[in-house]
Image (cartoon, rainbow, N blue to C red; front, side, top):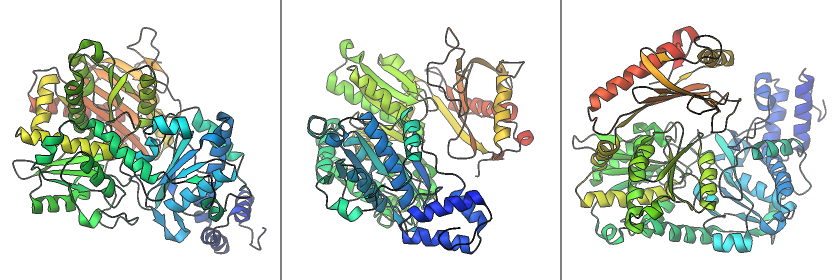
Length: 619
C-alpha cells in the first residue's frame, strides 16, 4: 500500500485508506488512520471505511472521527463540494446570492473536529468557487440559520437573496456526534429530489478542490460576511409580532426556570423574553453555558424528561418557580414542566404542548384579527401524521383548516411555504417530538420563539389563576380528549422487520390488511410504503410515499389511531397511538384504560415481540 503502510489484506479497504490519506490534511484524523493500519485494527477500520455516510433530507449525522463513515474535516469538505456543485446546477445566480452557515458548540478534541471548524471549512469550499457566504461569527440556535433567508425578506431576498443554508449541529444527539443540515432558498429543510441530487454530486466531487482547505484565506475574503448582529436584532424584532400582552408581561409575578442543557439557547431565550417584556427566567447555572461534554446529563435531550430536568426542578423549588422551560442543545425544541398542587412536577408530552400552544396561538389570532369568517377561511395549522389529531378537532369546531404531513418538519415547512405563497396564514405547526413552529417567519421548529410565546401564555394564565394543566383539561373538555401512548421495540434484524410489515399487508390473504386487532374493529388503513389508503376513492394515498421506509396507519372504530413505522436512523419499530374521544366524554380513566388495551392488542397481534425476538423500550 502507498504511504509506506503495510496492506490490510483487504484490497477494497487498502484503496479507501490510500485515497483517504491522499486527501486528508487534518493531522489528527490522518494519524489515527495510520495507527489503525499499523495496529491492524480491522474492526475499527471497517467502522471508519465500511460505508460513506448517506446524505438524506436531514443532511448528515454521525459520530466525529476519521474515515468516510464519520463527521470530520474531509467529509465536510466533500459534502460541501457536492452541495456547492448541486447549487451551481440549480441557481444560475448563486454567485450573486450566496449561502448562510451557522454552527453550535459541539467539539471532538481527539479528531480535531468541532462545529465551528466544520462551518469554516464549508465556508472555505463555497468561497473558493466565488459564492458569497454569510457565516455566523459565534454559536447560534438552528432557527437563526433558518430565518436568515426569510426574516429579512424585504432586505435579504431583494438585496442579498440567499440560495441555501447550512447548520452544523447534531441537535440532542450524544456528545460524540455531529451533523450537517441543509436548508433551501424557501427557508425550509430540503425534501426530495434535492437529497438525491446532492448525494450524487458529493460522489462526483470527492477530491478536495485546490482551495477547499484554505480556511485562513476564506476568513479574509471579501465574499465573507457575518450576519450575527443583524439577524439577532431582526429575530427579536420579528417575534414581537407574536406578543399580545405586553403590559401583563411587565407586571407578571410568575416565576419561570429555563435550561439550555449545555447548548446554545441561554442568551437567545433571555433576549426573547426581553423582547416580550417578560421577566428573565431563572437560568440553571450548571447548564446555561455551552459545553460539548454535556457533563450533567446522560443524554442532552429534554424529551427524556425528569433525568435532564433534575437540576431545573431543584432550582425551581429553591426560587419558588412553577414552570420550567427546557431547550435541546441547538434550541429548536422545547420541553415544558409545571409544578402540580401535589408538589410533584408534570412534564408535558409533545402532543399536550401541541394542544396548549395551538389553542393559545389561535386565541391570540382571534384577539388580533377578530372572528370574521372572511379571514378564518385562510387560516391553517399543521402537524405530522404521527402527532396528535387535537388540532384537527379544534379546526373542525372553530372553522380554520388543518392539514397533516409526513413525519418531520421538512414536510411541514415546505407545505407551510406553499400555503403562504397562496396567500394563506399558517399560524402553527408541531410534531410530537417537542418541535413547534409558532411563527411562519421560521419554517421549521423553533424552541426560542416558542419559549417566549410559552412565557407569555403562562403569564396570561397566571393572571387568571389558571395553570397549564387546568387549561389543557379545558381544551380537552371542549374539543374532546386526545390521549396518546407512544413507544418502540428494538430490532436489529432487517429481514424480521420486513416480514412483520409484509404480514400486516397480507393478513387475511394476499393484499388484505387486518380488519380487527384483538377485538378492536379497524375502519381504515393507510400504508405510506405502498401508497394504499382505504379512505380515498381510488385507494391511493394523498401524502407522499416512500418504499425505503415502513409506515402503516390504522384507524379504529372506537376513535383510536395507531401508526407503526420504522426509524430512519435507529434500529427501532415505533408505534404512535392516540384515542380521540368526542367532546363530553370526560371519563379520563376509562379512556386511558381503553387506550392501554388497544396498545396491548397491537403489541400482541401486530408486533408479536416473542415470535419476532423484539426488545422492548428500556425503562
